[in-house]
Image (cartoon, rainbow, N blue to C red; front, side, top):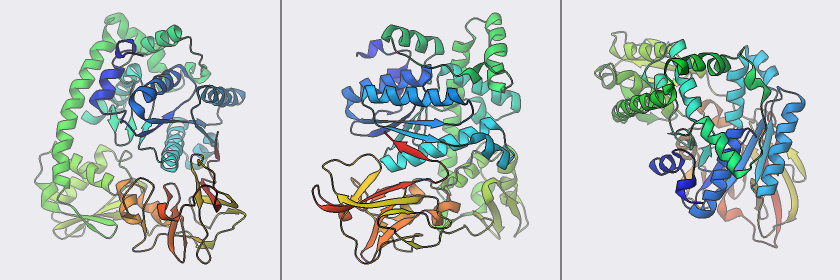
Length: 461
């Protein structure tokens, strides 16, 4: 397939943001709808040309009964036909939303992305591709405008944010449908997309048609505006990152002299705070402009011991001339437990459970499954310990602490992440992979190890 045959700006966008690295591993989120089928098909062809490994993941929100089951079966059959390894996950979004007292859309998104991130770690994928398109981006910007937002919200979604890539972000929905028609590709329709009780659907089906009546080129003009705003936002964020470089680590907390925030221009200071919160590994998307402004005022104020409480259990504290970014409560830790050599082990407080069985190491391991040689003494699942190191396949040796920080793994969950270890040291890290020196060779007696999230069952097919 030549670049000229690709829809919209797919080729240009993937080149500009280095979305398709040769030799890389990409996880594609696939709902079964038109956008995700188009993206999976494009990535499949590009994988052959560019030379990267492609994996797929589908999450069942259990919100649409038989239709949800139909979608999962469709994606499973499609991936089997296209010979793309697929991980299926599911979760009771409605029940979780009731428990959190949160909206369905917000809860579904958080559970879906948690599943995608965990799957990407298990499969050692450095990038997660989602099928957001140009029309989605316009809808997102309008949603932010309605709710009130700064430059970040008004510039819509970024083509690339960390490990998340959106290769179709400059491609319109009409182009996607035409591509599917030309390639004769099947897809499923999500009936909930017609439900205008959801704000996004109301914008899509009622507001945008009115705007297109006023200006038939509205989406294209809006797309140009979003790109311009994104360029401004990226420049300001780069300036904020330079301010944040003045911070230092104190164990798992982050410390910066208050003057660096206090003296920054008003357009830079809150962005520097957001950057610092992101460095904690918890992300900062749940922090509003009011939260960020409160931390800036903390830096510019005179109170030597004032505190600002932030979402997600985080807080910023003034300690004389410095700002300390930390958590309000000590994080929960898992209780160490010996590994069951034939069966499942789920230590109290652990995010992941572990399956283990005796077998023979195959010539090729399935995604997310490790084959380790004989254990030295009694293997246990335990929290990380000071000095723990691991060398994942194809990577350099790192301390587990540094590895989790680099991957922005939530600080409050780090001591709930099971480390499989024995008297010889670390054997594997849940969600990341095995210690390469402990792997068995094909044909050798081995222990088959796999980790899974008990609260979000999933399987690899």
